[in-house]
Figure 1 (cartoon, rainbow, N blue to C red):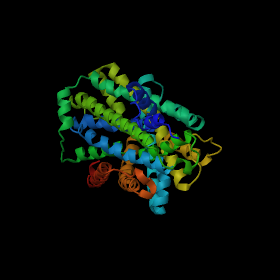
Figure 2 (figure 1 turned 90 degrees about the horizontal axis):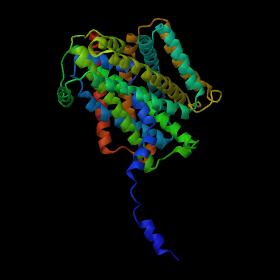
Figure 3 (figure 1 turned 90 degrees about the vertical axis):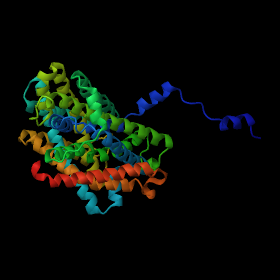
Figure 4 (figure 1 turned 45 degrees about the horizontal axis):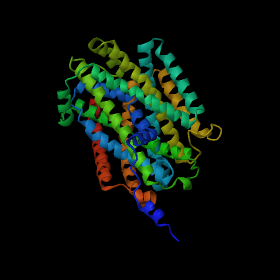
Length: 438
């Protein structure tokens, strides 16, 4: 005989979760999305945003209002693809698209990542030289060795904790923006009122900002980290990882949205800082974040200078493992061999070989004296080319019922997803139209 009291208890709504518990849950669930968003503001990205503020002033602040939801939607799709299918984005592309197309896109992403690693090593090492002295090349070797050891011998759980703490380095750029005392009403006006300048430099800079902000390596890293998180829960097989609970999807979206908002806020504050200091004082002749840090010293003082430079070191320590790791995931999933940051090197030798090769080649680029600014340029070109078909592929996969089941994209997500595809496509076309004005 049924128990009426028990039946009433089961039908009654559960008590709302206390506010403190909700906050704790939110903070505990921050992980892949936050790390991915922070890694987007790597040394090469900081250089791009610094040049943007110094040369175009506050005119591109409004772009952050558009790229934030675009990034959140695309990265959210990547997270869901990884969670629901149980495999990373590259593996899903290998299953769903012609081999020549999937392999071509994978190769472009890996080459672009490698150029980016070289540029990031140059950026963080130059910043370390500004702060602590010692030759730049010595710092390159030091950071290269440190990151190799960490990625090869540290567990995924430990790496994830380290990455989370490294995201705090980006607050250096938030603090710096307040130190320089901008006219916040003027900043607000440029944020909410879009402006567009029909000249080659402005449009080329816009393409650089878009290419740096919505980067292909983030797509693969996000979905692969979701798979890693599920492996950490003990879901060792693809079958065990397939599908997702409502709360898991909700938590993943909260994590992704937080990371993307954080990423774009940092971009916003870097452009603001360099616009109201360097740009406002006619100091447009900078080509990197190091130039910006040096130029900030007489305008904003030593503290702003040190914060700007130190922030580059922290973001490089976060971004280079993400770039090299993204290449390793792409290659491993495309070629179908064992993958995972929590695997021992002897169990996944090819995965770790590709990961290590990305770091070593980045170091060698600096030893051979390859111009980091040119490396950054070619990385942006390749990313700009790869982003367009990749965004299309992601939106397409996120709407396939045989892949996503009940977790297909919503109408609003699809609107933002296709808008991102159109914007990135237009940016790629403009990049070639204004090629001679790079």
